Image (cartoon, rainbow, N blue to C red; front, side, top):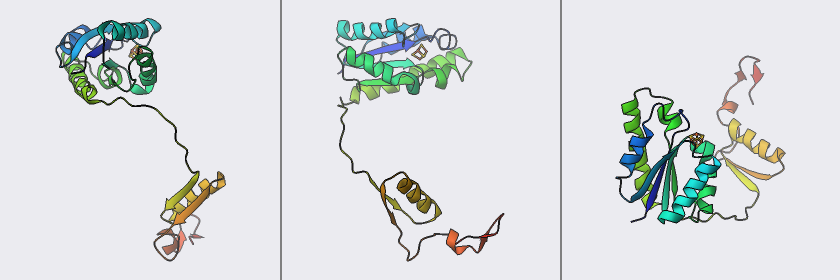
Length: 193
Ligand code: SF4
């Protein structure tokens, strides 16, 4: 089984005022594969990232779970730190215990229990994650729009205006979809065709 490290962020009082992060880390330490579970005040700070890198090396960690804010904020920050620590950055799961927990709940016991549940799910997932390699592949800059209704026609025109070749595919004999079946349209009474 992989050796998992769990890092629980306080975010100052953003998380720690509502979620008992120390209790969360203690319960995370009992989860399958978890060999290290710890808290830190600001996990995205330079010292926080150093803590993650040092912990990977010193504990021979093979997968990481970080419970903090939304992945939109710091998933890339942590992937980079984990890669610098020597691990594949996709052997990592981020758990949102701020926007989806401490910011939307006020009952400390229940918010803490929710954080534990969210972390447990991430631990089980990260145990099954596969290491991935980012890559680039050449693409053909052409597009096909399926459906020649008003939306499809507009999409095709927008793509063409952006300078790309586009094919518009329609199963009927004519384009225009529902729109072309109407006589006039509100409020200008323009001929819809
Ligand atoms: S990682 Fe997210 S939750 Fe933690 S201190 Fe930084 S912004 Fe706050």
